[in-house]
Length: 306
Image 1 (cartoon, rainbow, N blue to C red):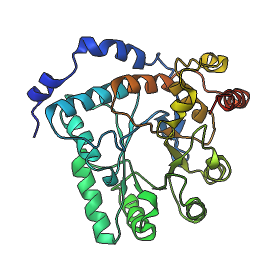
Image 2: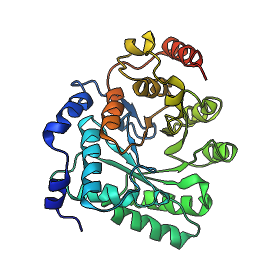
Image 3: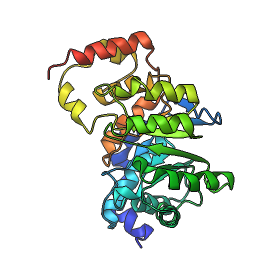
Image 4: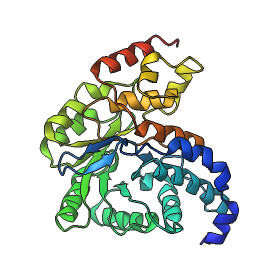
């Protein structure tokens, strides 16, 4: 196990992190929050994903680097950290960072169950709790609908027994939408997770409206379409509507566009870079676009070459 002394030796200096902390720190009272429809609990709108980015080694330098990323996340008012056993070592790296914190900030811990069979699912969820160093998950969702009837039955029982606070279903890549819609109509879900961004607005057709109608919270993955949106915007100047919304980058522009949809509860952009995390958290504050501003954002995006 990595010692705190080893982590401190490998960590970025406080002086080096200071400019990024200044960017990430929200103005008092301005963090964007959204209620979980089923409970009214407020969540900071910008969360943190861990797919690929936290699937990393257990050496002191790597853990210290990820600790800097999470420090900026919490400094920016973040709380929702989402992971999965599908993401390699991501759960373990989150747990390593949390374990070495002197004081753990408020955390909304979310993971997924991604296996077949009741006993295998129970064993996997127990392993996830050990890896992420949490006593009880706030949210566990069935990942990509794998054996969803079996796993959701366990999750419903766990929720009634107080072993997990919220339960849900996830998908990504635009897959399984019809099956997910059917499950949303029939099952008592607290959360659904799927892909949605300014370049992939399929979720606007049915998923987001149904979530609003059914009172289901939404967690949005792939907000940057795995980085392809930045290839589109490149070095283009930020549109006037972005500056009106307090955006200082295209990343914040893309995040704010998603937050402008009233059925979106939270977003989980993933990064292992401190400057990207500071930029992401800059979207966790200030104004949210209304319908007219979203339309203008869309016009500006569609006008980009490529």
